[in-house]
Image (cartoon, rainbow, N blue to C red; front, side, top):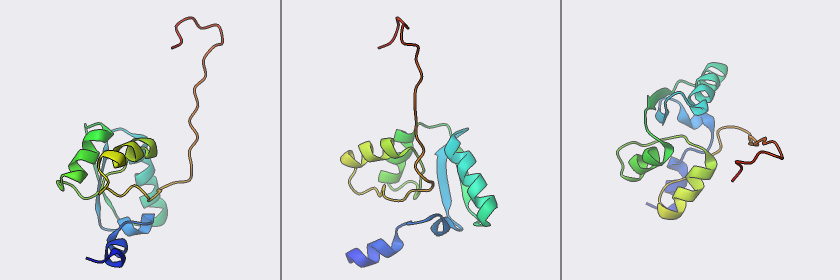
Amino acid sequence: MTADEVEKRLIRNYSDLADKTVYVQENSSHADHLRSLSEETGTPITLVEVPFESEELIQLVKNGEIDLAVCDEDVALVNSTYYPDIDVKTPLSSVQNLAWGIRRNHSKCF
């Protein structure tokens, strides 16, 4: 398969998920987000929530047991160094900032 043929088969935006099965960690924000996107856009996707951590989902993709999984970008990027054949280039939302708030005088910090 040529590089162009491979690129054409990859998921590059949300509409490419139409009629596909996507695996996510159960009760995750990813599941909620995908359900909302599906309802808002009318894009039919089959969402399968599983009791696995993201790393396990990535392993299932790598092994060819499932085709698509959604997880946090940082987890996907780290795992792509171990599994360069997985595709981690498709964002399904805008950038979401994460932050932690900890009292300055909290004695049990790190």
